Length: 333
Image (cartoon, rainbow, N blue to C red; front, side, top):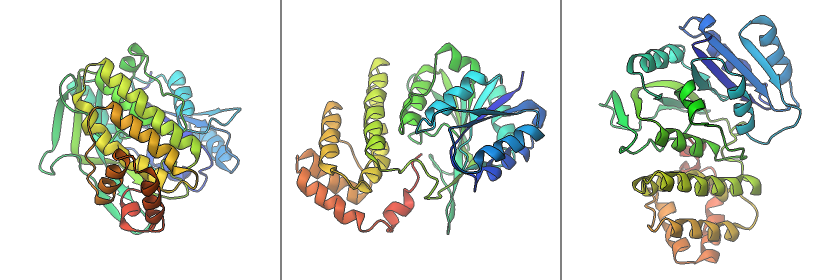
């Protein structure tokens, strides 16, 4: 049995896939301890050939090919979970990469602490910038969170985490097969079922590349917007089932940002989804606190049912698509 199974959902990323796969080959951890499961979701570019190349060359690189495109990362990840044999699970998006010591660092920590999951911070890399993100104060190196009472990290990516495989199996944890928003539901469900979690605040092991053409998080078609709202509703139900209403305000104040950025770029009827968000926020029994000024204004309009004005306001903001607003939040976590 491998120590770690790394699952990579792949669709039309031939320009970036080698970078992701090579970041695994360059790990300081012994490669013989790592299983790599590459799940192709019916790519139409050269991705399939790259997958075959690595599978032919490296015995522990496993190629799986879907017959039908699923439209998101959830089904390929679930396929990988069913195939995985490692003691621990990690995920890697094909347009991102690992720092060379990420597997070793997270593996050593989860073995040392005997917890269900260990999460690290990330480095965000764009065309003209690179920055280190922190969830907590920079002076805090490491935290141990009690999942029964502490607040989860609102950065809900599953890719900067090492997961205990048996824990996932015991709790029947899989991804809801949505075009988008599946990470938040999986992450919160995992957190609420765990006992302890370690957060490595000063270790930036995951490298997010904010390539606009490859980022799935900001796709603005109707299906993705609907599924984002659906994931909000399902996540709320999970939180309420665990009797943790304290999480709702904190989490959705943060997670509304990528939803509204997606809606900002949507060319269809924005009012329809503004009304749906109003109904969702009303169901929380608390008005969310948006940090950004533009979101504060937008949310005030929504909660006053000024949907037409809110829609015009969003159309105006959409003309500023290259402003710092979108640059800063181009990729959802």
